[in-house]
Length: 240
View 1 (spheres, rainbow, N blue to C red):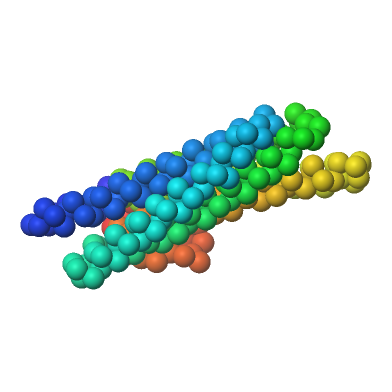
View 2: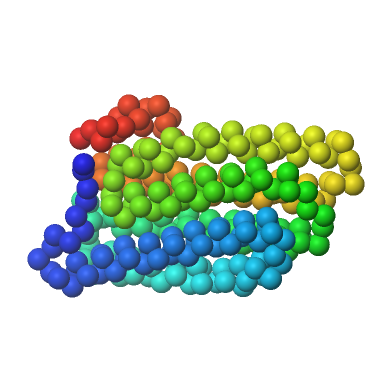
């Protein structure tokens, strides 16, 4: 398995700087994953207090993004990294941008949870949403794990699950449209569920972005706008 060693420099301080950045990215990812988990719990259980706490905690993710970005800027200025080190810094900058936006989507779900808490809650409308949310959370977790281990095979495997999430999203949309047609009084609540599903779908897309950054970091190949079939053909077996 191809990996990238960020601790190969003769300067221990440089090694520590790179490792510190990597550690902060994973900390930020863990915060986003927890925000997502809490947001879906708030929606499914009608917990407005939990929804409010998600909204109030988003600033922590934003602050960590700024801190990591500043760390990367200092490394670029002082160390003038090249080759894999430069790719690592670029991948980090892109990754934290996506993580911050995932945090925003989780905050959006938290706001919807607050709105939904005061409305009637048919369990049938939340079971599929929770199932989709768990699939998205697992994608995010595995994308972060692939980043931590610079594991191309894991990144490709995680990418391949996005289509399943898309199918669940489309199924929820069809179901919600049916509910609205059958009972227009349910439109406000149903729209909140639809927006939550849309936020989840966007989080899954950003988890895929992180997987693409892992491939770029390890292989030096930009695979954005490349089909999943082409990515699997090129890297599915972790080819060099």
